[in-house]
Image 1 (cartoon, helix red, strand yellow):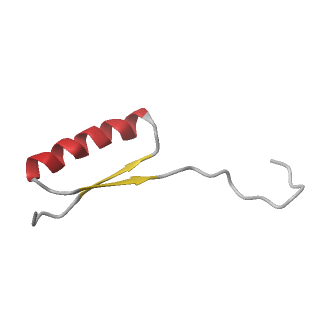
Image 2 (cartoon, rainbow, N blue to C red):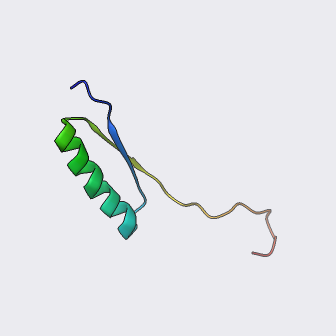
Image 3 (cartoon, rainbow, N blue to C red):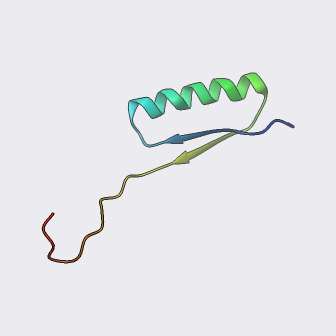
Amino acid sequence: MSSLPVVAAVDGSDDSLRALDWALHAARLRDAPLRVAHVRHYAAWTQPGAPI
């Protein structure tokens, strides 16, 4: 394989899963590696005792 990898970031949402399907298809067509990054949303950090 000499192709650059196809990269997809997945957070579990429907849109990201559709993007992953597209990326898988694109990687197969190009005979390229597929790199998947799982991303997670963290709650904003606040000071202890601060109202949310």
